[in-house]
Image (cartoon, rainbow, N blue to C red; front, side):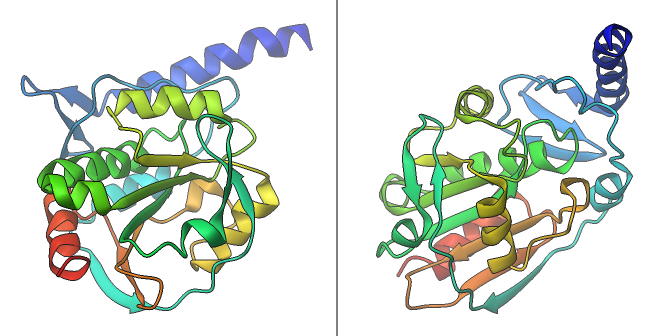
Length: 230
């Protein structure tokens, strides 16, 4: 047991170093992740014990895909309660019944491949929108690793991407997170197999736009501008 406590952090650190070899800071604070440029990250994010040994090969393959698709979908949101980055309870049904545009994705903070890209892409999307649109758009990122991604971890993660208070980072019980993922047809069994998905919706009465693939922040901003605002 004592040996494992010593070895696990070493393995985690070694794995993260290997993952970070594909990441280079540019002078304009853009990030190059697996050959893809992503703007908006203030610093590199490190993982935690026991997570460095996960197999990111599926995510690395996704990083190489340049295209994305957009399809309208209808989803039934479960009435579950999650926690925001300040530890406050958030009813998903109530949150998504509000009459305002929504942009939503699923991430986890120790992911070293597509999750930082997806989060930075949301940050870039926000910068592309005007002030009125920013004030109206509800941005939501839901952790799919709730055992580790407790509110205090999400607060630190949000700071890495300069997220403002209008951007909700949510966690909760595993069964509730899984229920939300299944509702959005985003459940992949393991967080290491989760897909790069973004979900956009104008009002509760209208269908969601399911964006599959790593769309750029500018592309997402264009989709938001053209479909979520009159």
